[in-house]
Image 1 (tube, helix red, strand yellow):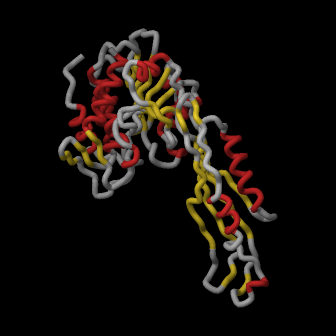
Image 2 (cartoon, helix red, strand yellow):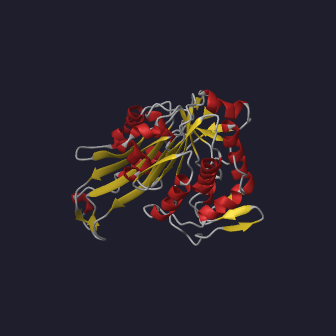
Length: 354
């Protein structure tokens, strides 16, 4: 093991390297050169995704995974450090987590477990573009392992599992007419009123699994309708987003949402499920992951958003979220990262490897 760098300064170096979604290539080139320079690692590149593995014959293999992309720059493209706070796009989500992974990959040549490092592209955009899904489709054996940790921002604590997500497009039909004679038509926009009220009055569900309390949501996130200023609209489309806890399957979550929607539908209306992200249970029963709780004393809470722990769960690999940064400031113009946060995540990961 070589001397540890300043993990905070390394994070700043990564923030200064632009990697907006679909533009990660040069950043991935640089990471690849760093990994290939380490003889203890075998490196595979698939598109703009990297998988680096040790092969030491250990009884356990731990996967450390993180996405290389950030959201678009918003006057925050350069790293700026003020009083142990790093400002810049991706500082929280998730250049801090990548810095931890990169440091471990560079320096820890004889870990107590075999390691697989997964640096993947395009997490911040639609699921169809996911770099992790690309790896799975090309060679899922690269992701063989006993458990996984994603470096998503959790402030150096554990956010277990993740909620699933469904997106619906609901189209209500009407009949056009002149606004001077509205009784000759049927206003599709007006038909939204009871459906909007039903969704607004939806009762929040907060199940607790393995000590982690999730909080579901059902939100209207977009409306499109209208023909002209003097025409009764014959069509309106409502977009609805549902986050569901991991005690429900995709089918159960879909059936629940439809039970809210269906009473407000008539003939000619349509409901389309346009995006699916399955949920993931807390998955902290694996001994290696349990050590983070029992020996490090890390706080455990539920991940209310969706992360790629769900993809690992689909592969039969227990996974959890542990990384640097505060998720509530991710994607904002004022995105930032505290030194203590990345150092806490770094120390926790190192404790599993020595």
